[in-house]
Length: 202
Length: 267
Image (cartoon, rainbow over all chains, first blue to last red; front, side, top):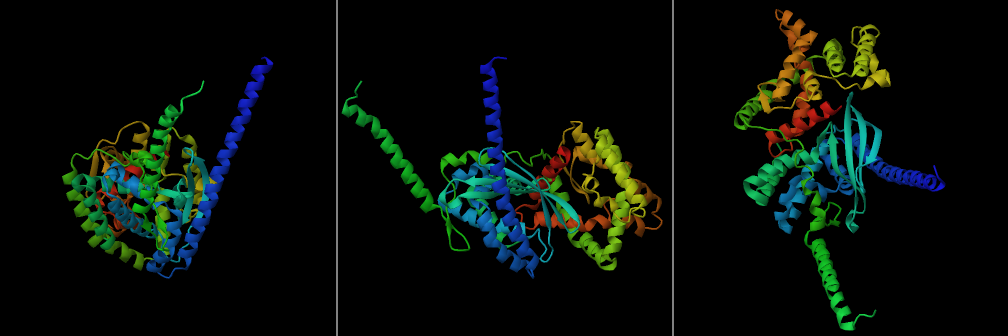
């Protein structure tokens, strides 16, 4: 092997190490951020006397850590382009309430889950998946958090864009339901159905 | 080579126009679609066409052919009434009458006795390591754990979280597709593949055969049989958590079930 090809291999290996390290640092940052949020939510859940208080106190934390805008757009799918700006705003507002309610419904006030961070990887630049295992009321649950780095001034830093509990993605689950509503009556039907779900929980 | 000033200006014009349009679009997007948060801050959604590429990311997640949807929806409605008015009160009564340590003990004994179901399926899937883990778990819990009353195996990290194998999962590993979606009376969400798998699960379940043998004492199989009172609490909690904030209960359960079974098959 000549000196030139040896140098090329060394260069390639060095660059791979640097890329790997950069990737690790990105996922570490996201995991550190996620851990802070999970700890905050668990702290609120362990002290909340009832579900209503839990929901009220958890809301600002979730608003800070979840990218509801991205969640709503992906849950609606390509039909989102046919929403007027007012309809988009209204859909995000309603879906935020619904997601917060769905997420807090998983907690029983006073019960504290213990979370183990099992690993994280970067799916594409600016996107990270963090796998955790949660021990809650004697059962183990696999929870995957999907995070994305925000690109606008309002969404800078890492934000959660989906929560996958035992393989079930929150966004995908609502996508199936939104699809059906959208096919029946477009954006108006989606908003109507969302309003109904928010105002009249089953 | 120098470019005449008039031509250079002409080249700059489209750039200036594009820049102005982009700037006005950004400003318009930010002001037109802001959402108020509870702390009073406004958040602008990403609504620019450039960020719309991700809109179809979840297109096929949770999808399954559902050619007999009207029939499935009717069965789903009957099941919903059954859960709400019959099974939920039964589950509550069981939780009230039987103290939690006893309930946990019953659950653990039955779960331990389901060992052949998991062991055979792990072996059929060629996952001998996991089958070995199941055998080890069964040995420890049946002896030190007093016939499985106590799950001593949970204290060993390698045995604490072995995913439970079933026949539907084995079919999935062998490449058998779902077929179509089915809602079975009482059992709920299934696919054609997993309905056949359910029959396999029952055939491999010692608890099921013991329950048939004990039908003369009905309360025993009512508590110990697979899919009986002992597993009701968790199943109803999962059902309610899924459907309480849904817009369409049927679609919420169908999508969640397909996604969950995919996770099980991928494990």
